[in-house]
Length: 84
Image 1 (spheres, helix red, strand yellow):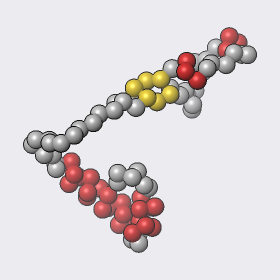
Image 2 (cartoon, one colour; image 1 turned 60 degrees about the horizontal axis):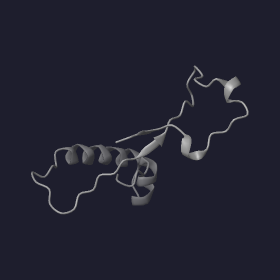
Image 3 (cartoon, one colour; image 1 turned 90 degrees about the horizontal axis):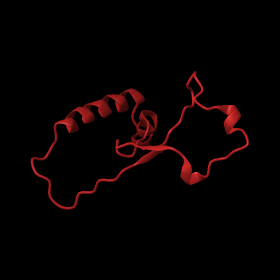
Image 4 (cartoon, one colour; image 1 turned 90 degrees about the vertical axis):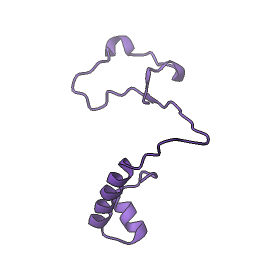
């Protein structure tokens, strides 16, 4: 689950049917939801993850194509948001 594998890939790797892999995944997710320690110890880290904003698939275009034509943004000037 932590490796973000698909149900099919997980099933293939451990040699079970996809339905079994799906059922086990949801059983383990339910169990892990209630497994919370009362107190943490050791080193804890928290990082931010920035994701570029994408309008792919949206029906309404938010880009003014006439003013954006011929100009290219540099990699550092793209709009991003924090996904924490």
